[in-house]
Image 1 (tube, one colour):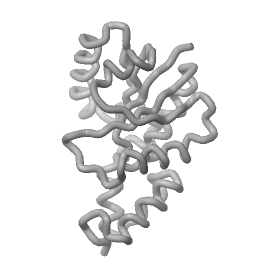
Image 2 (image 1 turned 90 degrees about the horizontal axis):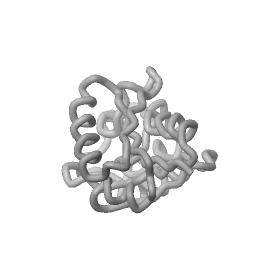
Image 3 (image 1 turned 45 degrees about the horizontal axis):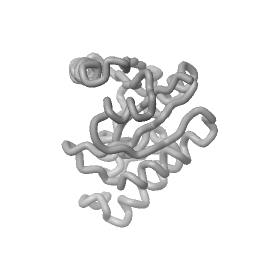
Length: 167
């Protein structure tokens, strides 16, 4: 069985993430969507909330499972017996960082490849940070997020849990 890992913070999961998950699911026998913490980001949703939103979103994809993980991705991939890490590339600006990470992961785990997938053109400009900002400023975000994530984001913002209150 060929397993691939798709790591990310997914704060929240977007339609672009889902597009990458679907593409990866058609290429590999098993996809592990790995919800991570990122010390450089302050997520709006807890790791467990992000995991739950992803699980609701990928429920119909039978070869996809959602897990949380800590530590080095290269080590986690080895533990999961993954042959590849999936990374989405929206634009050329993503490539330099992703390329450096891929080379570092290859050094740490030579048995693991990085596979870059491009989302559908309609999702190339979407990222979680921009979507959260649009929502904070009162914009409509349902066209960018799966239904469960859009509802959860609006509920969280309406409760004032973002630190910034909606318009």
